[in-house]
Image (cartoon, rainbow, N blue to C red; front, side, top):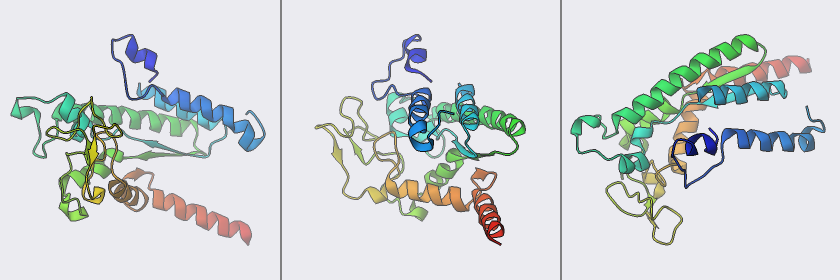
Length: 225
């Protein structure tokens, strides 16, 4: 969503004010240089539709991550009520909100596929791909925990809005590969590596990414015969 959408509601994002529409406009401005021609949930779908009209043949639309497991949310919305947390220590309501968003997103993408049957519109389930890391961190080598940020400014989750990663007050851990969370917002490279593997090889894309890649290889081989 655009920054103005939030500002009208008294919400100010001090981290970034770059929306999906900003990025889409940048892409459209760059497109003539690349191709030598100029040719809410609904925002993400509308952006995808516009990309299709611009000639995109394959689009990957990611879900929202489990927000309640990030150290930024855990810090900013810390609760004294134990019932607000699940068995993993994640806040329940932000995860329910993210899940609801993802359900609506999938319904809209299904409608978009019907409108554009010749375009590969892939739903990337970031939510469940990352949840497997939260549920079994040691299995994937994350020995220092999944809710604590590697780089931050202290506190129970090593996240401080006044001393965020990158500022002079923040410090970083010795081995980021043992952490899932990097700075309260983003994953570490190690966590992203496991997520990428799950998306490319596992059951966390619809339609399955591996089937699509195999189809493209077969199609390319047939065209060469």
